Image (cartoon, rainbow, N blue to C red; front, top):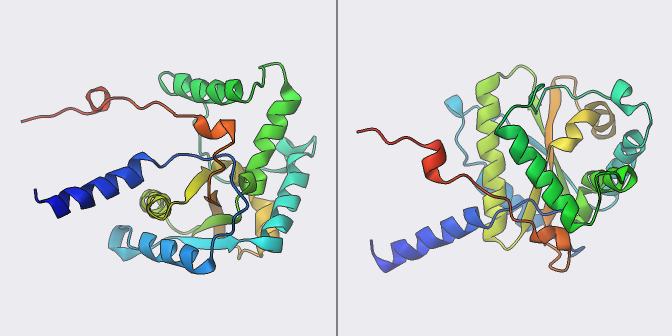
Length: 233
């Protein structure tokens, strides 16, 4: 492997390894051209028969603030769980090990950094609500998919989302993919005037991480390769 190849490999690896879910952003603007460039790069993600199932709504300024306000109103509604339903199950209906253990760990690791106790439901509610302001990021994105598409296209969509996050890291930006928005599909659909054939996949915050925010020091653990891979020969 020559030195240029090593350098290229290192840059790609760094963009992947340093990707994390940032939960506090600076208000530093991200130029439209940079967002457009990131999406153009990500559009090279693979998809079965080149279907390219992704649709993206990029929000900033007043458009982002108005969407956030509408969703926050729904989130604060005491009857939200009966009035607002996710249109697809992102998480399993019944959690089992090891997934429930990992879920609990990342949750309590975050709350410990923020000094939020298990009994402090009000602060938990407030912290979760920050999802709907895109954690203060200057750019928020809502991703949708055509309802006619099947599971394979959803797998393709994941590769597109990962490509956005890696391309953002290559440009010194950070992201947070957000499934929290899925419960409020009806609110988002009304706000963005989504056609009936589109459903919300997730949201994503994009911007520059706030280096002073304690929550941005959270580093999640990963299983070693030996824990999830088998090499056969």
